[in-house]
Image (tube, rainbow, N blue to C red; front, side, top):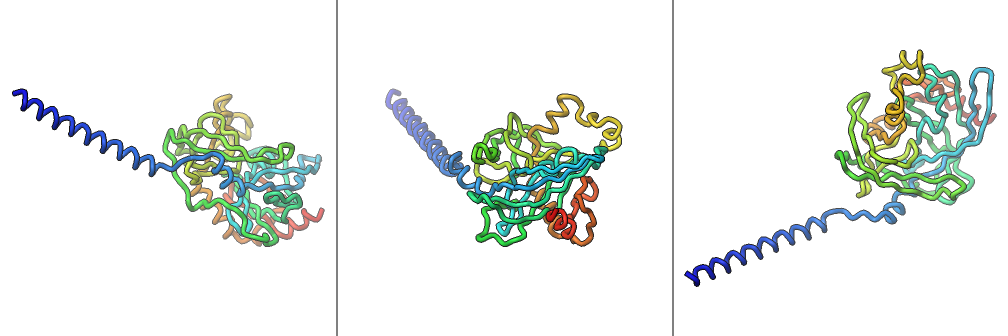
Length: 304
């Protein structure tokens, strides 16, 4: 009896040892397969695609006209010189909302794109913009000396709720435009007015800039969503759409437009014939989705 018990105990211990070995091996494989996240390496790899857009913003509201020198951050989405940025950042908040009751217009002129340590910038023009999606496209008018560092919107990921993601932006000129990263998580996904990823916590980034998974895949672009569904209500009460503090947080918090939607909008912007547009100042409108900018009018504005 004692001998049989000893044999059974030995077999049991062997099984336990084998199970532990299998679990440990699986853990090693999982650890080897799991992508490691190194914030410093992430910043070094992704931040070169962030460029500074400098321009003069010529704005008007009623009889008042003014011009101011402005700079914002954009992201290169084509190494030959196509830059994506926020329409709100480029044309100002009032101009962006002019399609739903705000009066005024704004024209960015003398546009230059600063890459890396460059302080002079490459000449560029406003190609098109989508007010409803809060996107604008800047295209270089001169070939860059070398292909630019860029992000690939076609190689995107769809995050799950609770997944950790990373935002990226640049600080202002006073702080030498150093890149800044911030980790947050995806806290929700909306279906209306369209599919959007909602981020929890303080995202600490600018509109028009990308958000990534920790493995480096872009999930989308931060935007300020402007819907035309509440246009009539908004005309009567400009702040009705905000719905109080909660609504303000919803609009100005971490709202990310999925990369595939950004890619589709970019293709529309590139394919739309510019000659069909006759807008001198690119007035904000939510229809059509992509508004072209007339080249002759843009050149005339740049010359003023």
